[in-house]
Length: 410
Image (tube, rainbow, N blue to C red; front, side, top):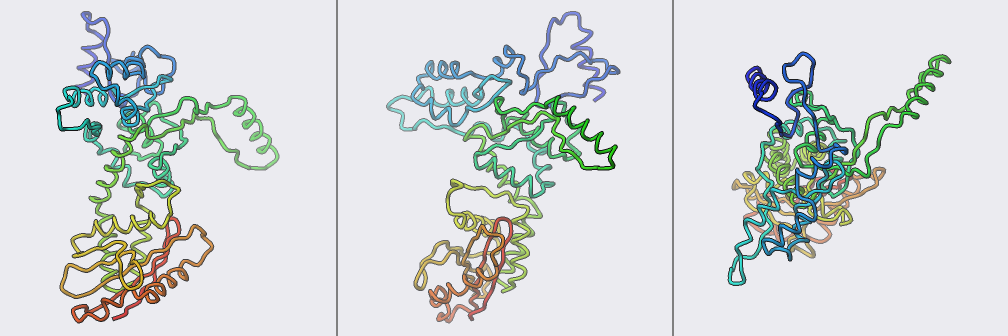
């Protein structure tokens, strides 16, 4: 810091050969102070609404994007470019990501009718920056923040304050507001200027007067304080959403806590330990950010099926064979797995889901066991001499919880 402060001070403040300079970055260098040598910055963040000329120079407008695509003979791909690289706001100016647009043109402008390679819309954003700070935050998430992350991945928006004066030193506190601010400033999220909620001074005065009255009468009812500006944040486009999913999946696949839970889950399945399976699954459900590759209107049971499939893939070192929606007996089994070792075990899983928190999940899990037996899913394996053990599980999910029932048939 001492070296950079001295460098910037000499280059930007006491340099008489310099008329003007622009210093760019995601976060502020440091907080301004009357005690620093260099303290006369003119700040302009993505949230600024009064600096239109500066905002116009940051990215490509709709008209500029159309002009660039036309110049490179790629106008036919405008709608696809819009879905993948559009969606940002700088102040009130609507922007396309210039890096993505120009990278797309660079890759595809030389193609002609004889070129066998089709035009591709690649993910140019991924791996363009370090994500250490973001991954560190994710290790400290609570369930409420997980739900907000899921809302974003589903194409929705969240409303939150943003810390405009955020600097790198603040990130060590792991404040959730800093996390959403970091995602906004680094381009993973953008904001909708039309949905910004500004603090109401009259409401603030009214609340203060009411609190004074409560104090005088001995009532200590706490009034809700909403004096911060609140922003509506969302993932700007398809490219960033895919990038987000990839980064989150990479994080959890390499996260030691995730690996431990997954290993316990798989070992519990092969060991016939229903309690261990249930505890491991509940631990994973509470900490895991689910990645939905389908509309939120799709059957929830499909989502949990994908969730378990993903866990089993993550525990591949313990699994020799994994089949999904496999025909067996008089129907289709949700999941069948075999272990890597030579124990000759077979595990069959039937998954159920309920959105009613008052329903007995354990009873539904028992019904799943009964379905396996009624439809004879396990019969082809019970009769085999090389199958030493047949374990069946009924699992009922409800939001971020589950109940597990287990039965050994052989």
